[in-house]
Image 1 (tube, rainbow, N blue to C red):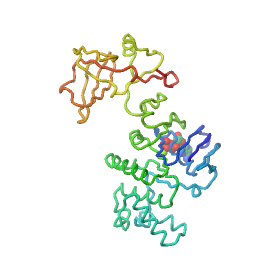
Image 2 (cartoon, protein in one colour; image 1 turned 120 degrees about the vertical axis):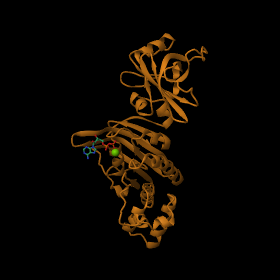
Image 3 (spheres, protein in one colour; image 1 turned 45 degrees about the vertical axis):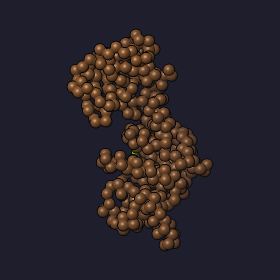
Image 4 (cartoon, protein in one colour; image 1 turned 180 degrees about the vertical axis):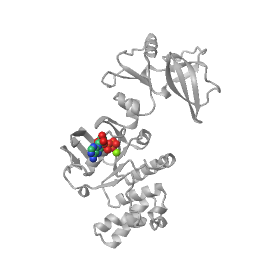
Length: 347
Ligand SMILES: Nc1ncnc2c1ncn2[C@@H]1O[C@H](COP(=O)(O)OP(=O)(O)O)[C@@H](O)[C@H]1O
Ligand SMILES: [Mg+2]
């Protein structure tokens, strides 16, 4: 559906994207995820046609569009600030592109109404001024304005980042629902890993203009191909030298020249005095330093052999646990190991 083939983008003598290769499939919700400045917008704008790459090709539906005008690519784009016209009402905003294309009046109105329905805007809201709408409603107008042009691809560049945390969570779900209902191939840009994990069919994690890994949210989180992906997605504990030595004493094979990580939810905790040897689990002695109670789970900060570890505990834990001696249990298979180049080491 979308193919980036050896795309290189430069700004003056700065190489923003050295060599970008990617396929996005029909109907997919695909996300570019990475820290600010890693090249997400650059890649998206190259797809949209606002940036011409210095080499390589972009193809849409098998057609080379590398030098095609943005308006000829069959894409709709939603920007972070929505770029709506504040002086026009909602319907006029949605109809704008159709009017520019000089379509017949009846068709304009029909298509605008349909696009508004797709994003659950009511007839009453269609008559309102943009300034009378909430941030979330404005975002839906921006999406309707893109969809009304019947693009084959929808591009969204950090569309939720101007909104408060609560609204972002709600809109995440709404946006995903709109996308799966309309079935439109979507490329989404965000620096928010939770957003990416919860919405995407597949994700490309970017760092300094390079793709670190492409995969489903589960693949990226559970089988991070690189140290960058492992540490960028969610919470993770780096194991200290002393912790590694202790685990190796118990039969683990953790190379001292590699780095080793374990996610907080992969550590389980039991009282130090409990002797139950739970199958093949490795053990680390630890002292609880602090507890954050978060209702549905708690986060414990523990000290294990002189270095801190974070442990996520779901379900109830004893009150006043801080200061207690505990044993951490972990499975060898839960440890993510990376070599000196940051590449995953196979178990
Ligand atoms: N117009 C520009 N001129 C020069 N450098 C730019 C321009 N746009 C982006 N950059 C640089 O290119 C890199 C990637 O930027 P961008 O694609 O906007 O990253 P992201 O969207 O991931 O935050 C950054 O280092 C940024 O400073
Ligand atoms: Mg950006």
